[in-house]
Length: 70
Image 1 (spheres, one colour):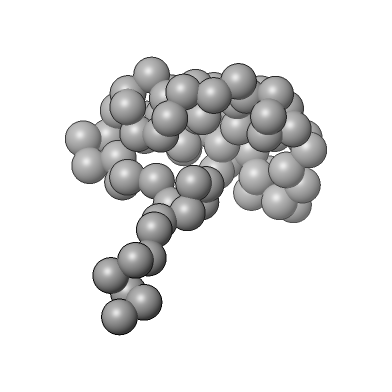
Image 2 (tube, one colour; image 1 turned 90 degrees about the horizontal axis):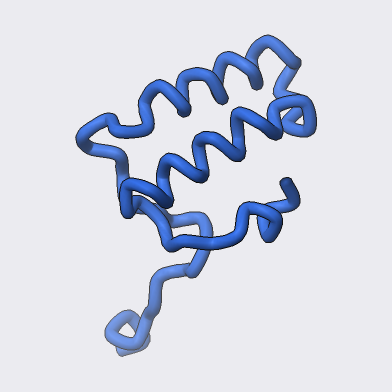
């Protein structure tokens, strides 16, 4: 069947942060988005900190954050 050959996407499907290592960074990001009418461009620093936290804790592959448009 085609499901046997299915591969997960490289981006967009990351392991959950079960132990809350990045909860603080995620909370700052979410607050920034809420306070800025979800205008992600105004929350670049918060986005960068959150992605760096996820990479540092093995929750996503190490990548240069500039590849995310930051």
